[in-house]
Amino acid sequence: MALWEQGGASGFQQRKAGGENDSNNSQRSSVKGVLTCTIATILKAKHSESDNCFVYKHLKFNTCMVMGLIREVNHEVNGSLATYQIDDHSGDLLEVKWWHDDSGEPLKPLTYVKVIGQVKVFAGKAHLVAHHISKMQSLNELIAHSIECIHASISIRKLGENGTSTTTNNNNNNQGGSNPFSQQTSNISNGFTPVQNAVLNLLKTVTTMAGYSVIEICKQLKQFNENQVKQALEFLSGEGHIYSTTDDDHFRAAGN
Image 1 (cartoon, rainbow, N blue to C red):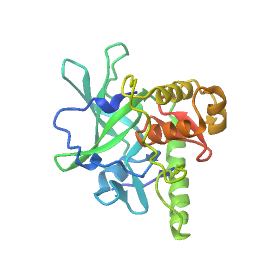
Image 2 (image 1 turned 120 degrees about the vertical axis):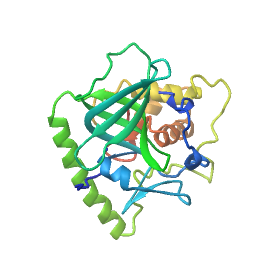
Image 3 (image 1 turned 90 degrees about the vertical axis):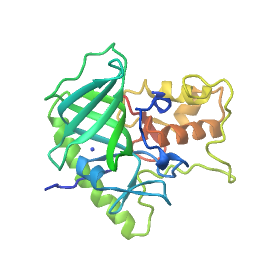
Image 4 (image 1 turned 60 degrees about the horizontal axis):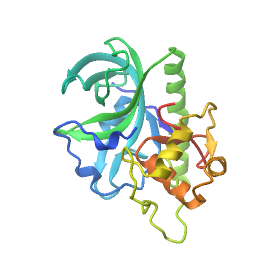
């Protein structure tokens, strides 16, 4: 889902930029999914302690996708941390922090990019800690992004007027009052449990826009039961590594 505001949008969770204020993550938020939005939406949002998420008008979110033009680049921590200033012409520049290796081609100023990451607050100002950054292949992507923002803003507002939840993506698959994050913690690899790794790696192979349904994932990962798969999807969605597509039962990896 998305929001358009006309102004005046990998195992990374274990790595953070120095000086990050993580008080807003002291407890896990119930807000799931990736919100496609403008930079103005992020910068105008306020953090809600009660909901443990960011709120702007009728939207609640933690993980966002934005598109824009890189205006400035700064490399720190032996070159493994890049800080970008992104501009989408909706308001001020958005600071994006990106931990990366040196294997890819460095992103330069005046490059259009798509960024998916978690919103954080540092020194009183919101910025994005990126899970994934990629170059835009065509400016048509930017146009489509703007249209999606407009459409989703209207949809989310109507849901709110009808008394329906207006969170970014409500993937509540709990059954029997169980804790969706009570997955086994043994044999953790790269910050993920075996089932989380298996689900994420499978979704990285998706080639269709609709992604894989929960049923399709369960069929391909027969070593795990349906409840384990749903718990993994809930966790990965909440961390911004995957997102739902056509409905709350179809998913793609954020890096696809």
